[in-house]
Amino acid sequence: MSGHHELPEGRPYVLTGKAKQLFGALLLAGLLLAGIGFSSDAPRAWKTVVMGYMLVTYVGLGAAFILAIGHVTNAAWGVGFRRLTEAMTCILPVSIVAYFPLVLAGRGHIWAWMAPESLSPALRHFIVSKTWYLNVPGFMVRDLFFLGFVTVATQLWRRWSLAQDKTADDRYTRWSAKLAAGFLVVWAVLICMFGFDMLMSLDFRWFSSMFGIYSFVGCFLSGLSALTLLTLYHRRPGGALEGIVGVNNIHDLGKLMFGFTVFWVYIGFGQLLIIWYGGIPDETYFFKQRWDTGWAAVSLGMICYRFVIPFFFLMRRKVKRNPVLLAIGAAWILSAEFYDLYWIAIPTLKLGGGQGPTPVLWDLGPALACAGVFLYVTHSVFAANKTVPSQDPRYDEFLHLHQ
Image (cartoon, rainbow, N blue to C red; front, side, top):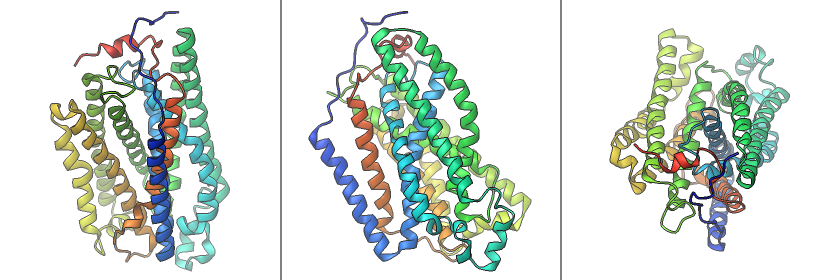
């Protein structure tokens, strides 16, 4: 056992009425826009619902991965803002609850293969050989098991971390590392299957063995960029983490965002290159569909928006050490994930092709509503306990990190 009572504690965080009003306003604005979307174009609105759901769920899952990596590697770089990371994962129980109406009410509207009777004979032909995997019971069991598994693991980490705050017992650190080692093995398989189910099966004809890794990168970047934004907000003057999270600590977050931005384009280009080289029509049409009918500009724009701009922006050291500039970069990367989800989901409105991009304001509705819920849950949990795990044996190293 080791104590660290002489080290600085974070300020208590109070969830104010103004903050609750802001989060509530986001929720109401999102619901209003979503309502407009359903009244004007219901099939499209269903696609935007799964986009908003996946964006926020990916943020929670990405935070869980960050926790696991920190525990299994005995890393100090994330200890000081770990209470935020733990709070972010508390959106996952909400995702589990929301999963049921999403799938049961949206089954034929979001995932066309769930209502084969509404498909043409030519499209039903593609489902026949995939029913062993693409069936509603299996779909729900896989995804709910994954979300439940991650929720249980993250709640255990959080419980052990809070217990360590009271006892300063290092055994909780060892327990967390052991759980993280097993967690990552299961995670590697299930995060890919979650991407296959929720996103790749939007167009059940297409398949790519690399899509699981592609969706993982989006998940991690979503969680990392959201964590960066929250950390920067709470380390501001007067914030709960002022004097705890230093410039060297946010520099680490910037380097991770930069590195995984490069990894995203590596996986994305690798997927495109393999499919282009193979030349199999059942694979190449996915990219052809996102090039025709006005999608060429959107596809090229995504390369610039998701890779070129953040790559050159985050490359500079001073950007990663400047809170304002780093916040801009993190917000950009988080919005790029929504761009990516749009690029994946909207073309599936017409499985035969011909669906143009035609972005509209109410496409943002479900994402804004989900963001309001996420911010409320995260800050409610963050306010409920100590804002830093000051009894963690790596906390001192975190405070004295040098670049």
